[in-house]
Image (cartoon, rainbow, N blue to C red; front, side):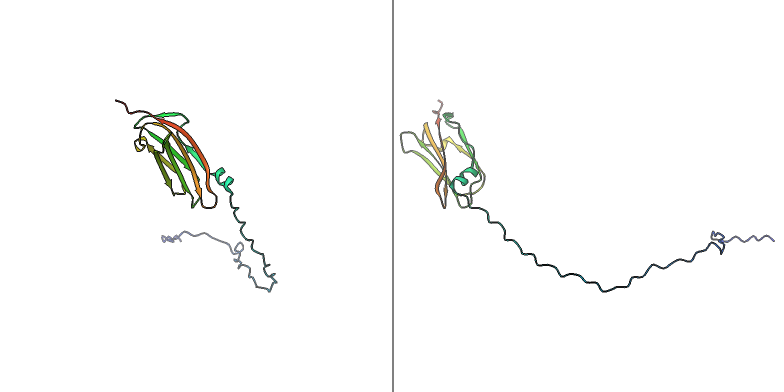
Length: 158
């Protein structure tokens, strides 16, 4: 006899011969094991940073830019001084003195950093040849790392 009823879910015929019962996962039983105690490792002290002597400070200090020797700067021009690696607690001094006089100026820069210092010629008292010096005033070594040169501030054009 044929039945018009259809089963709503698909199914397959499995014979009882091919069915395998699922297995359970293996069990683990904790057993006592001996674990060695950690060994004491001595901690090392950090290696102290060597203190630089005056020569070492000057070797690290870098004057990046200064007027070229015997350069001629316009009356209202600008010269650029730039430096790197000024040590902490050290002042950089820059002075420009008119040759044959005491006229000029001095700037003390107390910043221990990399600096770019544009310097306008209008700040100088007059035209003429100027000797410039730049050095570090170190707290332990005093006046070190001196650099110098000269330039000419040209006359004012008419």
